[in-house]
Image (cartoon, rainbow, N blue to C red; front, side, top):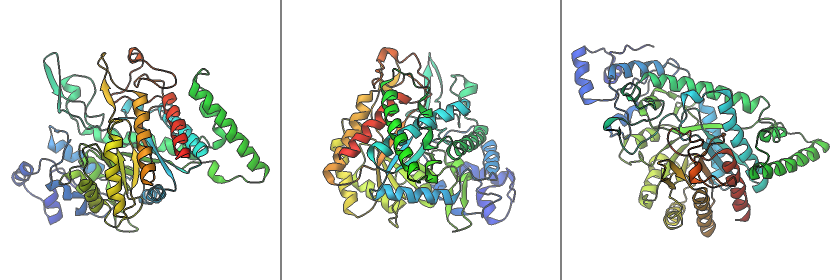
Length: 485
């Protein structure tokens, strides 16, 4: 089925076309119009109920007709992921919620179109595989691996504009919306970028699937994942010692005639913030097996701290899809809000459906988190509790660089574990912004990056990320906390 750019959503569902005059009247009351039509799914009005609600952090697209054309085209594209894969992840997260597994979720703060290359993708995946190996072996816990990858091209921002030298332009909202370069042409939101996001995500997922099933993720590669580490890196040396232990364990099992196929591949899922609702709705499909809606832009999507308004469009959209969902909870979250999220997003109380990703800050996590966990646990709801130790610990260095102290990141994770240990609940995982490259964006860590070093390789477009050495440091420390709880 095809739809012309001049067809409104309301007219589409009424089964008739409207004149340009009527369309203009509809547009005046509906600033964002999505055409939820695909060639491989039934038309379903349920994904569009958010239109009547305020939608925070949406770009001001200058050409609504161009946006409509793009959305109609996206709605005809194949799924990026499949409903069955989303169900599989929900099952794995159910184990996390029950205290039987640990979630490792990480990746770029904001992906970039020029970062869709084999080397960049492999380096991010390699870092997550190394962290997963550390946590699985050192903490003796199954690890669910989810990347902030293949869709994390959009970012919420604290201000809609940016001013430099007296010139004010729209703020950079991620490559899915506009460009990083500070020019009027670059900063003007362009809906054609939504198609580029789709294609970049498809390319990334294709390569990730090849890496994770084609031999690269085989546990016998634990040494190969470390070969390019600087030999003087303390985290690299520590990882190499662990890799030798894993080798010995695998050799022992092989000698006993045990060679599980699970060692040769790895389950790896994609996730991103469901920020741009036009894009997410265009990629929402009706599952032919169950008749339920799935957002097939990623296996798991989350709602951010800036868009989690209970009466807002993002929570409404999330309530209609069957993917595993995350909600970011900052220090201002009340127990009543947390309980309402459960009612809205997990009414059937299904373990694995809802993950609370808490981002309190190292100075607040011990004070703010206990009441939330207590009140939620008292209801019997089985949500997964995950620590985001990044977003509550950002500050601006004297050089003007946004950065984070590794010690603050670690302290928030420690506080997260302490709270759960004290309450007898399960610290379900970590959610971190990281890269597989040797950037200098966060200070501290085993290789000791100083504030004066930030300029050397400060490459992020938005928020500072842990480099691969700092990421491994964190994995070892988290494994020790988990084992010692």
